[in-house]
Length: 635
Ligand code: PRX
Image (cartoon, rainbow, N blue to C red; front, side, top):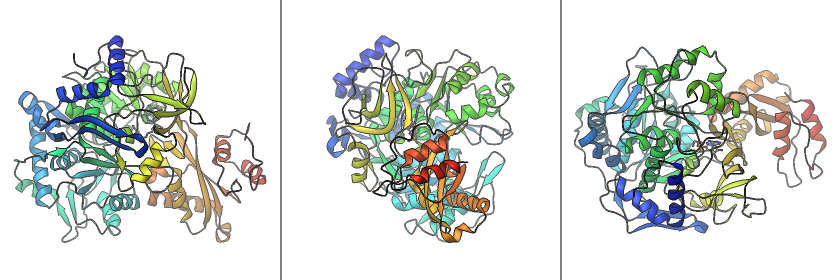
């Protein structure tokens, strides 16, 4: 009996129970039957939750790219691996077969080696959504270099922080990128970042927009001539199961971003398994995930998950609103997409537009539609189900995180009955628990609590780059012995989970995780600002937007508030990126603080939401009178 595919509800429970009773046998069998290994493991897993040490497929040897590409060549060489849909609908889409992908990745891998990149070196990839992004990621993995993809919407200073944190030796970027009717100067951003990054020795530049750019002698090279000279014969590196595959940064509630480290074999098994089941993947499907490869969703479900299954995956360079709001639907129709995976923020933005944009297209090819990144509200769920899925495609509301590597809680289409706004049941191998404030597990149903996972799964991130202590403290200390997700959840009467949102100081804006602390740091660097506090508040399209409370220094008191707000947002944009801009900035003379000096964000959150009903006990505040003042000035 194979455990790789779940066909009905009875089988789901059977597999689930097996995965809990005998996790080693369960994952060992999946790993052994569905991948190619140079050498299999000595032991399926070992873990010590207290020390946050987790290992899977111990001592096994493998190369993930051999599994993504090479092993498919005999049967699927001429099959399309990647469809590239350019930003401009008049530019022709590109179909890259598995054979061609093999050739391109092999050449790129040789270029990287010739340029001195070796196993274990970190390479930062800062590219738009073009085929070279996929090729670069896969070429790194092929030679064992650790890729650190940075989303091409981040500012130079955010890029610099990430490059320095993991000491990247090389950056792969492009002369520019297209997004809707804008052209983004990616190379300029990299140049600025690299002024602060002594570790970077080389920059390879992809030509995409033909923008005139500066090339620094001895550091920068155009990629194409190097590829033209490279051989397409490349021997993949033999990797240990636990060798790092990539680093991907995610915001924390405090301090600098966390470089989550995913390792090779566990991530491979988990991303492939979840892709297969959550999307009901079958051989001739055309899969489209609209995320950017700069986020975990793109890593796992544009690249690794689909390619490991020999699927056809779409890379879309543009945005849903260009040239008009029917772009997504037009692409689904054009490529006969069978699975469509997007974020609630995109659904809400498109639902706001005229229905004709979507009704123009029958979308009959669709089989499964998915949602990820934040809670999907009931209205958006129904709009998606009715107008995109035509009420015949199961909506998979998939809950997971950068840290989890793959989907954790989700309906399995055609197996698990769906319920709007519920991510529903855990996938096999995943043991969610809800915890109360006293750190006890909450039994039974119809309860809410802090969502933890009590047993390791293959895809869990193994550490934070360079800071295992922070990894242990962030994820394994709040509820000792368990992985703490940072999310709150509700379990209904039949055991379905509904994620209610973050319970730490992370705000999800348009599906992007933003820590409030780094934004506050950026604001506080403005010369007129003394102190600030950021909270999230509900927003129709973005899910949440940011509300900032700012105390000015005396010098700032005389300045024009509107200009100051603009400057503050510019600071945020420069330090983090435009995604972190604040929707509202209220200038205040003080912030509600406890006697130990901690800002009571709970109160600020309520004010930002316009909910003045119950502030709870504010008598412990050092300055309770400030609450009234802030309420009066609310924007
Ligand atoms: O709060 C949860 C929310 O997104 C967080 C993880 O963000 P990130 O690491 O950027 O990964 C996003 C893509 C996997 C979670 O802690 N989240 C993600 N999916 C859902 C969700 N909240 C509710 N429902 C979901 N389906």
